[in-house]
Amino acid sequence: MSGTYDADALSLEEVTDRIREAAEDGDTVSVDDVMDAIGRRAFGPLILVFALIAFAPVIGSIPGVSIVTGTVIILIAGQMLLQRGSPWIPGFLLRLRIGSEAVKTAMDKVRPAVRRVDRLLASRWRALVKPPWTHVTALVCVVMAAMMYPMAIVPWGVTAPSFALIVLSLGVTAHDGLLSAIGWALALGTLALGAVLLV
Image 1 (cartoon, one colour):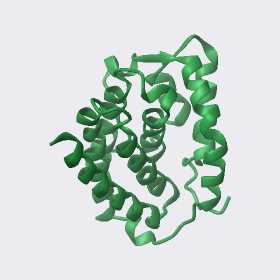
Image 2: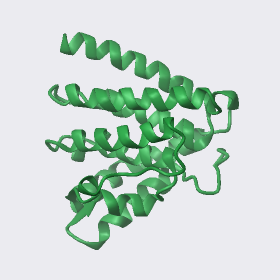
Image 3: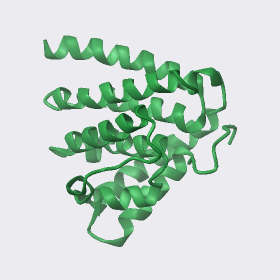
């Protein structure tokens, strides 16, 4: 893979594999299980995993899932903005569970695509993955996650903000400033789309 990652960072394929493995142990998988599988200090991969869950049609279409994932992302990205050492999630959110079969099916469906995406990642435009631009990315992630609340009433409405979040979190994880910039542009497009659909 061409991307350059920190020691505690994960490729997109590794993220999907770890989510699937977390779903192997029972009929349901909790938010806490997912965080254990990904690593609790890795802001980028944690945002990525919950954005993937919201984006995957098999899971994201389940009523209430986008609200849960949006809330978790707001908490993670908000603490990234505040430069906390590791994200904290309240217990009641950690205990929320999703059916394991839906999780495994979703990860199996996206795995071929994410393998191809991983090959495109690279450490580029590094100035955009350092302060103050990392704060901009964290703030944009908060806004996109908040967009999941109103967009949840629109069929497939969470697809746009969750895709923007996937790109933004990949930029953070891979130290890829080009992806961060693309994520900002996607976020602007999502806000424009939301204005059209919701106003």
